[in-house]
Image (cartoon, rainbow, N blue to C red):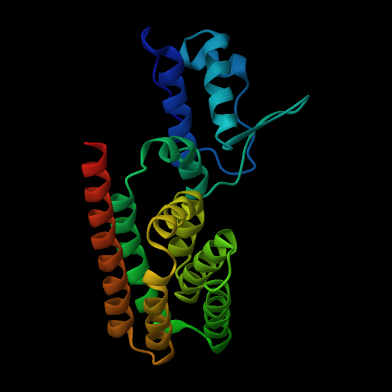
Length: 239
């Protein structure tokens, strides 16, 4: 392990970056005990206070675990650990529904195509169950339950893709997507996208990746068009 001396400027951040690289590059493996604060401070030629601050940031990110009387250990991690730390900032920053719609379009087209190719009968039944739940709730005055069923429908398709990264992305982005669904349905009502959901389901059942992708594309393009129109009206009122 080669440790470079820390420059005087931004000592804690530089220590954080180097230690993070050791973890990401698997120079320190999950379950492994890392050097003590004193050892790291000596190797980096910085104060123990700076090392402690860097380690605390990594502990907060869920990458390290400090155990009293034992030391600090590397936790088993996944990309979700790194990404989840950004979610609070993203929730406060990325509130443009058009941006989220375009992100959804890319993710969900791929999910639908793969689901049409790979879904098991049990997985198709789960997608159908979510769609049936939406069909019941669309006539009820329970927006929160309808949105939950809507998200379950799309997450079930992601799971049926048998691509764990797509499932992870959908799961990690759940809060952002959930907020997006809520904003859209409140603005335009649940009916606007309901028929498209049925078309997506039928294409998956028919094992037609191209049609599944096209139906998702049509749904999302419809949403984006409606959002643009809604925003235009809102801007005119505000102006």
